[in-house]
Image (cartoon, rainbow, N blue to C red; front, side):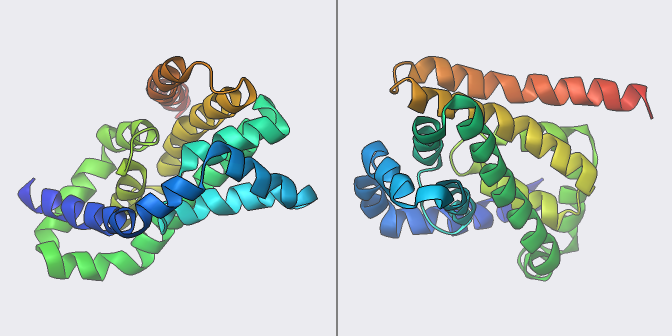
Length: 211
């Protein structure tokens, strides 16, 4: 797995570098109050702005959980959570699609065909779905794991199901935090960490019982 670790580190650096360059600026400007103001100033297009911010989190150090909380304040926990989940899913699909289409050749140069084969074994088996679902609540990991899944050509249906299993709990929980005024962040963290693997496990159970 050494070559796969090299791929992981290379992708992680691509994600971390923008944080090192612009992270402090985004952290200062993207307070919950400022983000809510931006959304509200967009009028009826606030939902699209929220989705756009979550999608470009793939390239810029956008504070995704702050955007989700702001959407909860603007739209309520249900609609805000739904919009948040759609934005997060969009970011995951973009990372998967770009990496699958463009990233494979670069990774072959970096880690060789052996590195690609290690990734295909990992994401072609049961572990891949768990990684995708569980990674959504962790910093840096969502983008890296989605890119690895794309490079390794993880089956799209499995990737999409695992992505949804991670994104929907995350979206609803942080929208709820925003709606209730950020009162219980520890509870939200536990829920967002615990629900994705439970949902993915339920999907696997239903999926394999009906194959």
